[in-house]
Image (tube, rainbow, N blue to C red):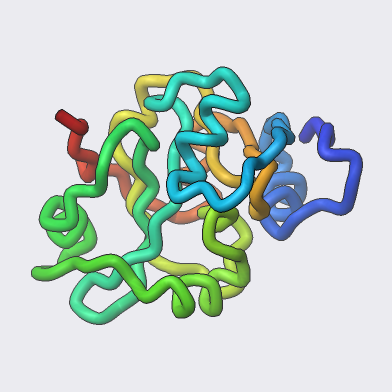
Length: 166
């Protein structure tokens, strides 16, 4: 099912996808040093449109950690996320807490295979593509899969939580 092109050990994200029997392709790429926008760098390195590569953001909705998955071409609309998650307020989570709870490092946080499964909201724009790219669990590796498979594997809901950049 899965195509392992990373030449090394799988990540928790790839293990989850493989065990579920979903079709996916791994896309390794060279990472630069110290990028602030890991997603944009990944999209550019892979030659993938920035609206098709999605970043995984760990947030807090009413004090509970929640994952938001939005295109790297957009920003997260915190108010829309709070509403989609059934809460009142949303804010970005502390990066150290995000790393601790997911088991991944910043710039490599995947919505799949997290240490603790968190409520997840995927931006509805994902459904406009046959496949999308998300982090495979480490910097320098993206996993391409069908949006419906991502939603199923994460138990996510979908909602319009992305705000297009001006």
